[in-house]
Image (cartoon, rainbow, N blue to C red):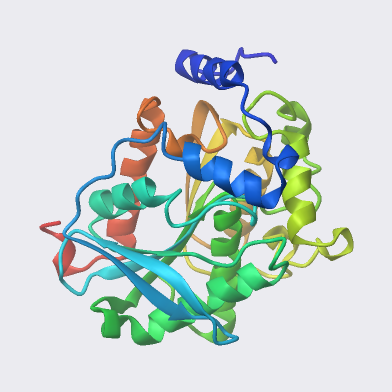
Length: 318
């Protein structure tokens, strides 16, 4: 691996990960991969921040299944709401793996974060995760008051595969006339076939390897279906009128080119875009705040962006 573009802390972190000799997710099967991710997901994050409100709830899916979700908020007020969709290649990840991150986003923004435990592949293949995210977004827009939140000021966000889901939520919101204040896209996947130059440039040794990406995709969706915009939002015919975007990318990430391409598509469609490209870090850096100062810096950027997008009197003292 050439480390010339990585920060010294990132080089050290990757070396430590290699020395730990953890098996690659694709060698463990879906259940084993979930267990391994659950154990390791927050090792590099700060301790879970104390918040005034952390509450587990249920949100109905389109097929009637009650999906687990969790509210994070700095007060009991009816705060504006961010629906947060975790990363994990549509196959791993949970409320627990992203608990520390969601607490930081709530703390830094002053908005309520509602994290969704959408259903995972391979048990639930495409488009179940998309349908779950859409159903949760629609439900919050109409029913947030029933859980003490403000659904009239609603944003959608996520990291990695969750960023993909957030992007397609924004398109769906436009199509159904739902007013979405912001889409928060953290290192999102947007292409159909993982074929951009950055996928080749960072195929090995940069945390998220090509073999892992291929395995995640195979769990979730058939190869022939991958040009569906609900999986690859760059394939959408038209992005005009979707919610303003805050796009956070990592320089040394296989997904960086498609993230940049999606930001360009949004701008070309007249969508306001705030783009932050963090140099010298890899995919998933946002969850490494215990070690990487860049993670905390970008979380602060996200907090400020959410405050602007979801401006509300209740946020002034948060």
